[in-house]
Image: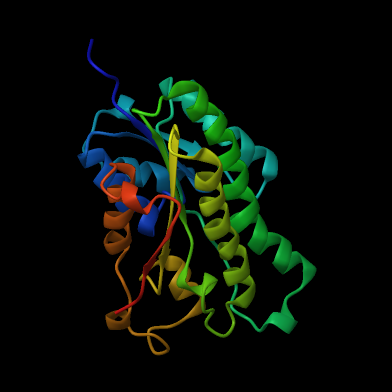
Length: 242
């Protein structure tokens, strides 16, 4: 019997790193569930994949809402019948000194960058542990940031939120042991030429030549999903800017 095509959930799939990752994974034979706040952008990504309409789905979702985040992996199973990988890519932040953050800022930053992804991991782990065996691992790739280790001025709260993903990733693998049915990774890029970057820094402040491309990050993510970097499971993979 032919094995089913693997299914990957990608958050923040409407642009940037998420879109580039969807294109790469679709090219590698994955079905992809595209999650993000704007359905139109998700459908634009879907149109770039070059795969059958039944092999991708747009799942509008604001992962800053805990109930929506926790339910997202289950929506993927409802659409495709399984879940093989998660790419927790969605992110957002303003840029301001620590002392200038309001309680609303902190709640929003941690909601998108830490709480939502953590709830997605919890739900995905339960699904994958029931679905998989040690010889057929599910994979979780959390997208962190170089700011989680050395935050650029104005990104300290964001860096703190992203640092939780580094720790969560390590903890998942510490709990899993050698017989794991899930392997988790954390990819922590520097500045990447995305809409988020340009919402906080102009090209005068940081030229494109000093930035990574979305596909630079998508290449590393895809290698984790495809099992090519399993020796780095549990680790934070640092990808500094040029």
